[in-house]
Amino acid sequence: QVQLVESGGGLVQAGESLRLSCAASGNIFSPNAMGWYRQAPGKQRELVATSSSGGGTNYADSVKGRFTISRDNAKNTVALQMNSLNPDDTAVYYCNVVIVGLRKYEYWGQGTQVTVSS
Picture 1 (cartoon, rainbow, N blue to C red):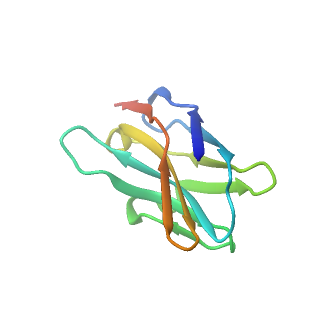
Picture 2 (cartoon, one colour):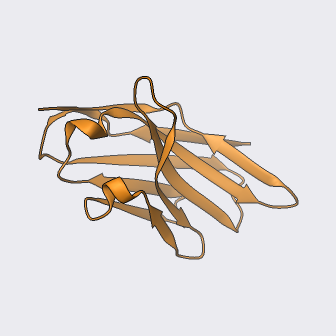
């Protein structure tokens, strides 16, 4: 079983920055992907950014150039540096881990609120 603990959310003004962190514990083997999703009120959960154990990254178009995902494989942590935040980034952000073994295993964090005021 894998557990994810997120931290770093909060309330900021437009243009400011926040850094989210997620620590994963448990049996995490490769290949895997660690990433962030978000869900705004009344909207579906959407991908923000992912990072694979092979080194690849993927970003939503809406955050490219503003957000950066990074991971520490030795510590099983993943972070999301969010710059130039705007009110459209307001959402609950969820850490996600996908492990590909004999089958796909997927885990979610509890979510952390990010609120950007204009």
